[in-house]
Every structure is written in C-alpha cells, then in structure tokens.
Amino acid sequence: MNFGEFVFIILMLVTMIGALTTVLSGSIIYAMLGLVTTMFGIAGLYVYLNAPFLAMMQILIYVGAITILIAFAIMLVGPLYQKPKEWTTITKFVLALMVSLFSFLMLFKVIMRTPWAGGKAKAFRITTTDIGRMLFDKLALPFELISLLIVVSIIGAVMLALFSKGEK
Amino acid sequence: MTGDFLSGNLYIYLYISLFLLCCGILGILYRKTLIGMLISMELIMNGAGLNFVAFNRFTAPDNAYGMVFTLFIMGIAAAEAAIALGIIILIFRKFKHIEGGAIKEMKG
Image (tube, rainbow over all chains, first blue to last red; front, side, top):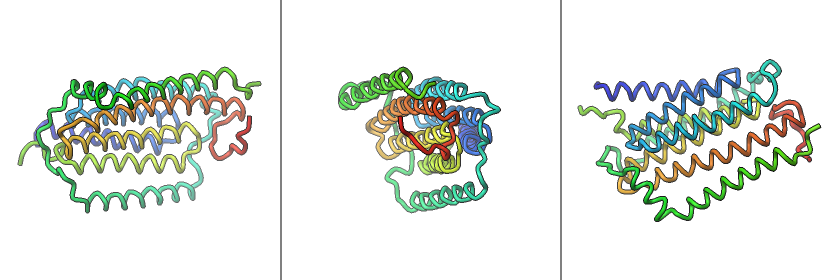
C-alpha cells in the first residue's frame, strides 16, 4: 500500500465517521459539526476523482455557506438547553433503522450485480477549463435557470422574514 | 498490484455514496427537530453528487456532464437550505419549538 491509498482510506473513514456523527449524535450542534467533517471527506474524495475544482466548490459552498447558515438557524431557534433531545422513542429508532438497513441491502445488491461499463480507471483529461466551457456553451440554459432559482429563493427568504404574521 | 487499487475502483465510491444515502434516510426518519432533518437531507444530496462525479470519472471520461450537474446540485442545495431555514425560523416564532412531530397546524 502506498501513501495515496493510505490517505484515501483515511478520507473514507473521515466521511463515514462524519456521516454517523451527523445522524446519531444527540445534540444538533454536534450533528452540524459532523456534517462539516463529512463535507471535508467528500472534498478529498473529489480530489481523488480528478475534480479539484469541485473539491474547492464543495468546501466553499457547503462548509463555508450552508453550514454557517445552519449554525445561524440553530442559534436563532432559542437557547440550547431548551431544545428537545434528539433521541426519540426506541421503537421509532428501530423502525427507522430497519427502513435504512433494508434500502442499504437492496441497493448494495443492485450495485453488486450490475456490470458497470468502466470498472477500471481510464485516462481522464477533463479540466476546469472544460467545465467552464460546458457551462457557457452546452448547458447555458440550465446555468441561467439555476441563477434564476437562487434569485427567487433569496427574494422568498427576504419576504418570509419581512412580511410574516406569526411574530407577536 | 498497481497503486490505485482502492481509489481507482468505481464500486468504492458507489458504496460510500450508498452509505451517505442510508445515513440520511435514517436521520430524516428519526430526528425530532426540523433542522436535524434538513442536515440529513444535505447528506443525501452529497451522496448524489459523489455518485455523479464517480460515474463521470469511470464510465464517461470524455465529457464533464456529471461534474457540471454536481455544481447544479450544490446551487439547488444552497437555495433549498436558505428557504427551509427561513421557514424553520418562522415556525419557531409561531410555535416556540421546532419539533417536527408536534406541529399540528400550518395556517397563517
């Protein structure tokens, strides 16, 4: 095993442990920190998939933007000691675990049995230049629609904050 | 054996994204607060993005559609998180809690 494989295994473990922390931790702020760990692990996996631009975007958007947004929301919804405990009844947890394990086993079998076209790595020469060219050439309409969606969501968030009647 | 036995294998990435998907399903089903459900949904979206990039890398290495769609997924996730957190804060203002199971009416 060389050094690259060692780092890859560490990234895999970071991703999985972060996901387990996100799901299983009792406090919501620890769940958010687990989400940050998972995002860093996935950014490392993107580097191994020859997509360094996506890794940087992952860190910028998820770790930088979405997690900060979630942290602000956690802080705005009251003090921590008033929050309900995340652990629900044991029956609900066991049922949720059963659903999750069932879907895991089913999709595991699907992945095992399907002969994917490229099991082995081939030469891959897509760079950031190609991604930018594709965004403005073939996929220009979805790109503009995404910007429209983000504008609509910003206006919607401002409207929700300004003109809500729930405030006393 | 070459050096990229693990990192050059498509199945490893598929299993990692499957693990993320199942963690997200578990979180959405049993979490009590709405923010916990939103965080679990971000896990599912990340699993989908990882799947897109892995398939782009291994089965279609000539174009970059998977990477571009992962960028789109990130944009949609950001917009969705903004709207969902705004709604959660409104729910907190109205009901004084954010437990998903205890919200009985959603009017006005």
